[in-house]
Length: 495
Image (tube, rainbow, N blue to C red; front, side, top):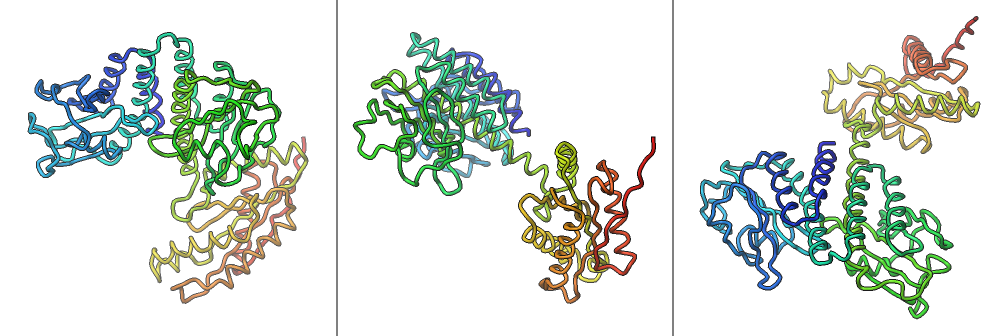
């Protein structure tokens, strides 16, 4: 969550102006204030000499501001040539270091990249050895992507002031998309903003799936779709995949002339595909459709590529946020959901069952004599038993069932749309599977006890259901363990 907060604050700052010098000053102020670094500089690429020169610096020695560095020379040139951050914890031990300057002891150089091309380098030096830990380096690397976008926006404004309306729209897209962390909401907003700003009839966001195929994740506009939401394009085909493989925008102003053209919309005559690339990582494609032939000009490419860069950064931020949310709900030892997730899900399931007069069952499970197993064979083996039992549960249950580690050796399973009787059968099946399972390195039989409660028969609230299932689990334990018990029917309350 710290990464998300930093990226949000930093992007708001560096995207608040189009003036190049103001952007560069904002970048270095953020480096100074967020990372407490007194010596930093931004090197920009001179297109005429292909050398990097200091455009703005804070705390830098005068002799350093006059440097001109060729790609591959020094740490800055190495970062530019290899297109990756270069960190040296002790510059005295690295032959690539150009110096000495002042009391510099460690240095990090991070390339500023736009569409996989280096436009500059953020160089930071410290008077401390090994001054930057991995967390700081990760944050600096992520921030540099926002700084790169800001530099590109400033360059566009300087070179093409006549496109000010579109550039202001790009900045608005950056502000609005940066604040959205839900991926589906973000992609819908991207489609809306592009439709409002550019002369297109339909906007599509295609993202790479686990099989490296482009899938339709969002689309909006007035054309008639051939591909539905969630559909995947055949591997290695289409203009979108061609743009992604080439790493550059592909424009076709009359698709009727393209051999084997694969249409996504009935009325399409012109199509532009802009790859979504985040710091060299290919994420997907922004696909723009028009029912008019010859709709796109060369002047449309640059601003739409800037939009794509902003969107790629926002999409990756959303991915980070999703991962952070997932980690917050996952038990670190077993890999299944934790109690926090259970508390959230049971409320949703009770609400759903109440609204649709459905059924819901929960199963409380405890590994029998787990403390004795830990004491006799050690906690490492005990941890492995917890992992194996969790795996058995996941493999034997439906996808809609929710398996959670409730605490210690205790588990809870949400079984939606299921009666208490059927949940008893599920629990008994799990009991038999664990009893029959041979745990590697454990010379004793591992068994479980379970208690089952059903909504609304055994309780109508979270606390009532959990208490009922827990009481049934206690009955199983008292009756000799390695068994399943059903909860007692909750007494009816009178007004």
